[in-house]
Image (cartoon, rainbow, N blue to C red; front, side, top):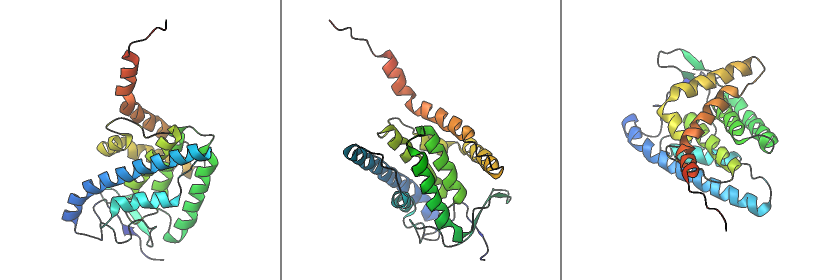
Length: 229
């Protein structure tokens, strides 16, 4: 078994760290555009086919590729090495599964997603997706940004349209990571106890979605009422 490689957010094997810092904001926009396009395509196809269109591995990998193009040599592909995630102080934050288990775990993930899709609400779907991709850590790096993008994509598809509002849930998570990481840690603990509880994440994401949509809800509440003749 190969030794696990520490993967801080600043580790990229495609370009140098300084150039990567300049490129990352560009790829954030790139990934957002791909995400919006995928939502519009899949929702249109769902209407045409009159059935659910659940995003699969190609969509996930494209979101990763669009966010890490030129930054990683294997952008858009599952990792071929073992990795570990460490805190800034050097302590272990998360030990993802070994590389040989990634493919089967992600196949299980998509199977679970398909099984819960029709009977689960949008926030629960997004919460499960966000936690599970982070837990498996299927890519060499860029897992967090890909998990957030895929989670938000699923959220929008479940609602049936690209959600309005700025900043988005993804933007709000990125701006303040502490509550996000705390929610992930709580789900990790409940999963380790063999009793996965999505509540910490559903509560957290629900509050962020409310912040994103608040201006639109306020506008609707203040809209004049027309009385029919």
